[in-house]
Image (cartoon, rainbow, N blue to C red; front, side):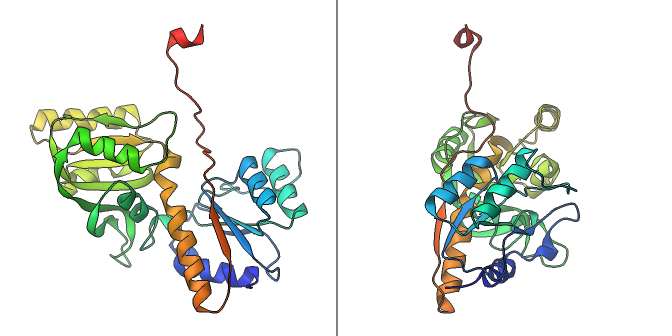
Amino acid sequence: MPILADVVQELESFYDPRWAESWDAVGLVCGDPSAQVRKILFAVDPVAVVADEAIEWGADLIVTHHPLYLRGTTSVAATTFKGRLIHKLIKNDVGLFTAHTNADVADPGVSDALARAVGLTGPLTPLSPSQDDPRRGLGRVGSLPAPISLREFARQAARGLPRTAGGLRVAGDLDRQVQRIAVSGGSGDSLLGTARAAGVDVFLTADLRHHPASEFMEASLMEASEGPALIDAAHWATEWPWLADAAHRLTSASAAKGNTVETRVSETVTDAWKTTAECEDLK
């Protein structure tokens, strides 16, 4: 059975903290490095329901994609929901570790798992390669086994991702044939121009804002260039597939060193939006 320090070292060998953005907060948030680790829960968000799930299952560690204290703090008093979460974890001997933008750019990382989840096959390449290592970087570009309509690809992507209240939003000609696809887990509208330059048929990501998406589609119409169609999924849903990959890598690496850990991927939907409704539904 490994100790927490061993698990952290293994995770950071996959997701080097030096790869994280300067504004990010990754690594061990709480936990005793000398404590033994038997069970590890993987989740996207460090929120109360995830902590409760970990405690009920008897987990010793939670690994999340999103940081708890992204902008830092001067207090962990239980007067805030974040402070209360830390108190709950410490009282129940549960550690918390975060791999965020360092997991986004890893090879394989968040976008590799997203690409496979929506049906991309063959080699995957970074959409925006890292300057120090072109094998790593933001997003991935890959291909479908054969061309299909945008309508059918959107359906395929919806089947491959966990269900959320918002589902998928699609911009483009639904009858258009598509094959070369770019994806980026999490917020991706900063990569719209990069996706256009890559010459892909579709860019699938999350958190696309109205004005950047509208201007992107209008530019394609004006240039008659048939730029990439857009698919906007829930932020949580685009990052969730990575959890199983990270868990598998950890268990395999631990087993190779003679250590045994049990992992579990949380299926609790922690997307902020819980339902959609028409005005009539609210009466």
